[in-house]
Image (cartoon, rainbow, N blue to C red; front, side, top):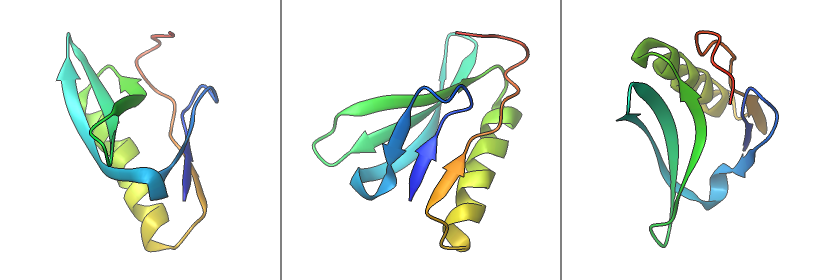
Length: 81
């Protein structure tokens, strides 16, 4: 499955990802992909834990449906990067 962030600036192939996590960094909540050799990449950044959890729920639902692609929701509290 492929994941694209809300800004449509990053696409990650989940078959190359060991795991996804939500990490709190300086008042933001980032969805981090960790690859087999320990390299990490931030997929998306949210202003609250609940928004990051909503994005992770969307990823989980797509995986359950065996979807090939999932776009993360926008809604980072108006914060643009």
